[in-house]
Length: 289
Image (spheres, rainbow, N blue to C red):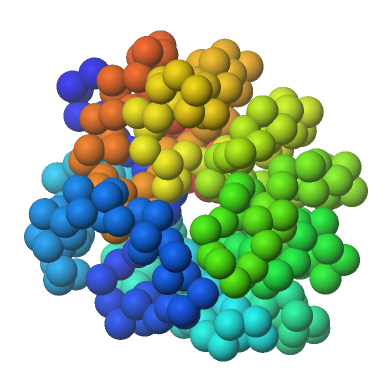
């Protein structure tokens, strides 16, 4: 396209100590994403400081970047604090922060979510269900979904295979999200990653429920056009009936941002769809139009 259109990266991790917190249960991700992280090496080396990280997004005409807190203290003993996400967004207004709370904490999680939105200024909820060892439709999730509707905020839900060897891949099945949407049709959901190996199941869920969006993060966009990759359905439906609900994201530094944009632009889909994927759909989901 080559016209410098704005982008929104729906998933990124700033190079700050608060976002570097992690757990051994994610070690297997390093193996799975080793090639991609090596490819992103030059870009990552160039963005080791906050200043260079911000400059990268400025050069790529990023209008907004979403960063996400996480609380998995009950299951894996650590958290990326809401306060750290909020402070980064306060200092850098292009960034939009999602809160992280632990569903196992019951009322404490609900109070923390309300505080994160009303007092800290975070604008969504991030639930990595496989890290909570809960299915998307687990009853412990339901009070949080109801609170999101009450607060009028969206929720990002892990909806795909996970590569942690310490938790089941079953937690991310899209069929569980379908049941949630039947009970909470007003809930605004972004499912990410985009459903593999149940891609067509996730496409069906989004087709059924107009409040379900699908983020590509952290899948290399080029694989959508690779035969037998399992992602072909995203390309077919994302250029037609779901063209308004596919959202670009990199999970940087898992994927290099500039390369990911170039791969979107190279996909065999309409230019209008590329614009929607890179910016417009996320703008509507996040309500920053």
